[in-house]
Length: 313
Ligand code: BDR
Ligand code: CA
Image (tube, rainbow, N blue to C red; front, top):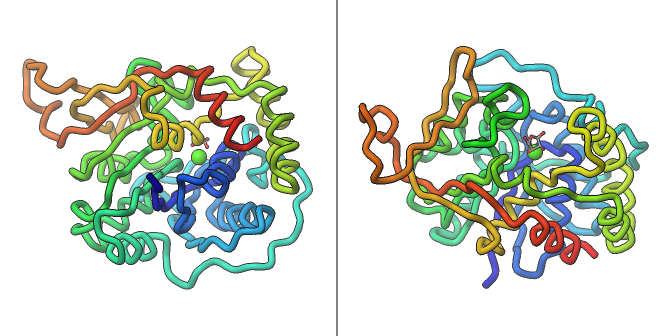
């Protein structure tokens, strides 16, 4: 089976690796990249998306998207994790191509409408582009094949606050729209991605397998690795965004549960994703009003890392 996908992204070191997988895997047809602020500002994200495609020798449409959150004030980009250029502050070649004239949201709407029932949206950054696409054309809810989100956390706790994962925290109002829209959706959050550790020897294998693109993936990884060493105390990195594609192609490596998501948009818990398992009664219906979705609660980390390396080797 071949999956036509739009990959919504804020590259970003781990985004870059996931983009490489989307371009390399024979079972993925990459219809386009849509960009958002997040790890970097949206201009840098768009530049990086174009660059990664050029390094792979592929002509993939890139559409520029959300520059700021829907409601909240934008937080500064996490330059200490991804570098100010999003790719570990390594020197980068010039980009020759340009982004598409239409916005990311318009690109999503047009592409989904052109192939009803076929297109999967894989989103691995803040969710403003998905929220904007829903606003432009709510009928895409019944026309997408599925939506896979890297973001959120159920039992694992947060990575940017005690309870919030970065992509949801960066735009909780957009996440609230996208995660509760009623389309077929799977959330691949920290409960799964924190089970995966990509080690330096894994990156060496990827570097050799990916030519000019591999050098950028490996060199930017070195910066990301230093962040993990300092803050998490281990030698390796979580390949968050690649896990969304791993779920799409190897869902048997994940443990999922079905239920209702609520996104906290204000206050100390902003960005938290609250999960109410399906068919479990609670004291009030407020946590079970949203449409049912699938949520990853665990994953076979070593097997996912093997899949990433074998895809890019
Ligand atoms: C997510 O946040 C970003 O920094 C990463 O690219 C990933 O999408 C992990 O919390
Ligand atoms: Ca990302």
